[in-house]
Length: 177
Image (cartoon, rainbow, N blue to C red; front, top):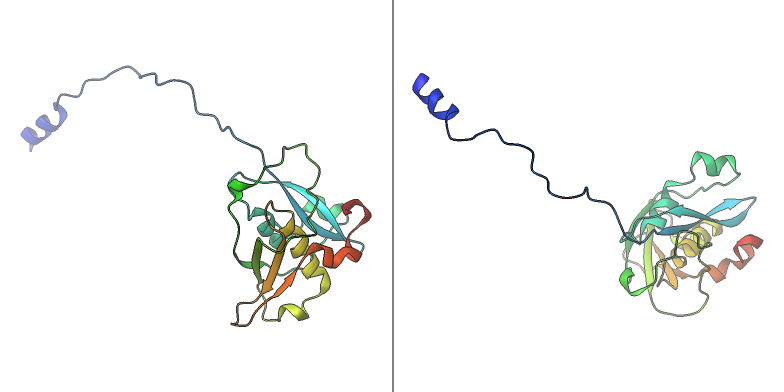
């Protein structure tokens, strides 16, 4: 046993000084802002939240998680159940990324391509969802670069309901127009 211990301890490794390998890594890249639509006094209000480069779906997940305490104290709310499955997103590298000081992205009102399909965690068919749910999803989805419309679905084998933010113009606050 002592022989094995002596062999392991004397295996030729000698203490050394720390090796310098350069400066510490830093995160660089574009800062991404997300526009999420919440509700105040029955109207949709665009809210800018921080995002992550390469995470174009983040605004929809942020919408599904609801308002922050700060947003709630500012009178914003959301009654959406959690956003479930999201499919059909176009390649985000083909679209521009807003600088951090940019105002909320204006939603497009034309175009018939670049559809994203979303499902809520509910068994209620999309045509029976409250209009404010549909509006929040449509407007938040269209604020993502490259998205022109949203298909609302529960993935029950039947076609979903295609909507655009413009379908809910009456629910947009004056600040969102």
